[in-house]
Structures are given as structure tokens and as C-alpha cells.
Image: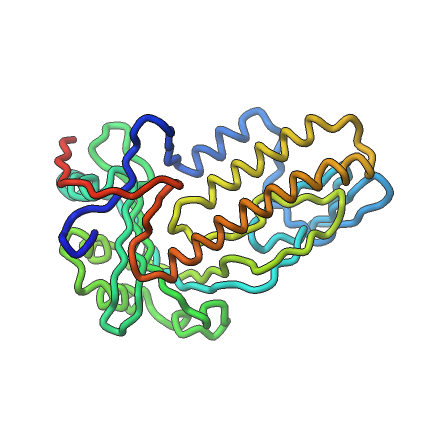
Amino acid sequence: MDKRGYRDDYREDGNVEVIRANRHRLRDWLLHNLPVQNGKQAVQVEENDDKVSVRFRDGTSATGDLLVGADGVKSIEMMLTGYDPISIFTSNLRLEGEEMVEQLALGHSAYMVVLQGPDGVYYRYFVGLDKVAPDGKSADYYFHLAWPDEDAPRDDHWTHSMTAEEIRNFALQATQNLPPQFRCMVERAKLEDIKHVSVDWTPKFIVLRGVLTQPLCIDAMTPFLAQGAVHAIKDALSLGKTLTALPDSSRSTISSSMELYQEEMLTRGRAAAEQSKLAFKDPSLPKTMFARQVVSLTEDRITL
């Protein structure tokens, strides 16, 4: 929302299809009919000749032609150096009736407000729709209140000793200048659902650990240009096409084929990560969303 009280938003014009998916449902759909073992934690990776092995904390291991590291920003398949830490206060809550209508009018799927708190810090206040009940009369929402915080990764960070009530009071103070329709999400949050998390974003450079070990989505991104999941899917599709085109599984073949994949992935991912980082640090609203131009929208009316 800008100084005039208008809504700045991304609007789909039919040229590019944009889908904001529930990640749990999307993950379950992608895993359909695939043999997956959950609860595994990789602790060691070794490459020998034309094979790669991974050892898990529970003592088991697996060996194959290629290991794809899709285990997030703390992946053991690569070494991440440097970060932009942020703190986030977050909560889930259920809305129904007029409360749900009010939030849908602000953003059909999600919205973000950039605000300066009484402490002078610029906060990002993100509210997202998680899922709608089958009857369409209620929905699960969540909000994130995020700000740059160099001490966020510390074990003795000041938020660790705060009670849920103190966290909510902090969030209420930070958002005290917001209009009621925005701030009400913090006011409605139940104490047992409020928590603090710290995140280290945007590695400055990456060192790949081996020819037969390939990472997915190597650049962590602050979620303020809506590009993180987009590039993760692009990485997966690109890697899939590269693997299906391999004539054999020899080390030399994989090495030569992966060079082009890595070059494209690193160039694209780092550019998007840098833009996302700047969008978080810049106190103005982002000018693009989903790589599309942000435009001003008029007031919306919703009927359940």
C-alpha cells in the first residue's frame, strides 16, 4: 500500500499464467507414486570412480550414479559462505466470515506491506492465504513480520528468552502505525501460534563438492520478489532435461553435460537472489512481482 492509500499489486493479464500453490499439497502431488523415505539426514558424501555414495545419520547409506542435493540452504552437498540474516515473527490463524472477506479484499492470495516502525527499522509485513476450507466460508492464513537482523543466527539472540505474549507485543508495537485492516492479523493471533525464526539468506559464493553431486536451487532468496520456488522448479526442470539427454552415466559424460547446466543455473539464480536481497533492504515497495510489473489496483469487493 502506498502513501495515497492505493494498492500496488501484480495483476495477471492472461499472457503469463501464475499459480500460487499450497506447498504441502504441491509436494504431495509431486511425490505421488514415488518411493520416498522420510526422516533421513545426510552426514557424508563420497565419490568413487563412477559412483557416488551418501551416508545417513541412522547408519544407512545409498549409492548411485548421481546425487542431487535438494536439501535446502544448509545443504551438505555444497558449501555456503556469507549470508544476510533476518528475523521473522510468524503466526498461523483461522479466519471466517467478514474477517476472511476483509483479507481477501486486500489480496486474493497474499499481500505485503513495507513499514517503518517506531524504532526506525523498516519491516516487511507479509500476509498469505494458506488454504480455504471446503465450504469456502473460512480459511487458514499466516503472517510474517520480518526485518534485517545481523544477530539473528546467534544462540543467545534476545528473542529466544521472550514469551509468546512479549513477541506479540513487539509485533503490535512495530505495526502500530498500520491501518486496522492490516494490524488486525497480529491482534487476532493466538499466543500458542506465535513464534520467532531466524533465516540466513543469499550465499555470496558456492563451492560445488563433486562432479557426481549436483545441487538444486543453490541461491537462497528472501521471499520478497516471489522468485525462490520459481527458480527451484526451473532448476529441477533444467536438471531433468540434462539428465535424460545423457548418453551414458560415466563420470566424464556427466562432467561435460553438467557444465552448461551449472553455468545457466548459477547465472540465473544469483541474479534473482541479488534482486530479492535488494528488494528486502530497499524500504520502498518492489516494482516487480513474479518478474512482472507491479501496478496500482482500485478497491476490491469480495463476496463469499
